[in-house]
Image (tube, rainbow, N blue to C red; front, side, top):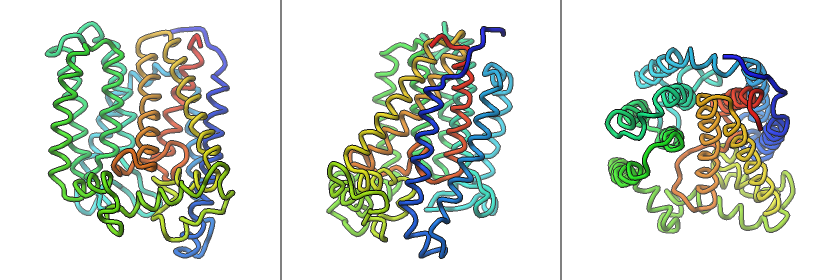
Length: 366
């Protein structure tokens, strides 16, 4: 394929770098107390997050200069490798258990989470499949059913870890891509009812998920157990007021909110920067979504459009669920906030994905 090449979307690049800078700053501010207590180094998590950010930026820069349609040729290989990793992580002695989930492969700080990479692998593969079979997608049997089989096979492997949060983001992203490709609304309504039934079954199959639902509905029913995180999160957000307590001024990071540098980092940001800081962060994410949609609409081919839409949808779904959990609108799911939460796999994966989006922007009429 050949197309006219432009400069990358510098507005998108600026938004990514801004979110990344905020993320590294907030990881330090949120984790300094825990890091000093556990590792006698207040910068322990911040230094690692900065290293992850540098690795991710290098990957993003390299990928930004690789023509996006190149990934179409390697999408099958990528998804097969991710499938193998998802199987390996379930084998005792190979997979590492953290916080009750056997989701990591590696040793110590040099571990990866295969389910994170499966999200991008699914986007790459599904974008190619939908581009080739767009006319079939209106048919449930020959169009939508193969997509569902493709999506829910890795979802089943991810649920064996178990990791409902990552699986939900992957399935949600793939369904958004399928919907915009032209699938019939009535098929999605039917899937919606089936999905609710399946979600209920997943919740009922594990006692800890039932506790998360009950704590979401009434966290004070178990304030020292399943409701502890959300209560401490709200205690962080409330005192933040309009302008916050200032960077480093959080009180909840003093052993009240567990692991504040990860999934609940937005609570610390809202406590220290207030409503204004939280609103500005949401504005940055909204602008990120807007630029991504423009790139998807202006892409020169269907593969580029679906690929861009998938990457943006993945980020948007994660932001929505993460902040929804932190402010008490959704049950706790363990999903990171893109570009901000501490974590090597999630950060490098997101930066790599946006490297692809930046490359699409070089050929997009945005």
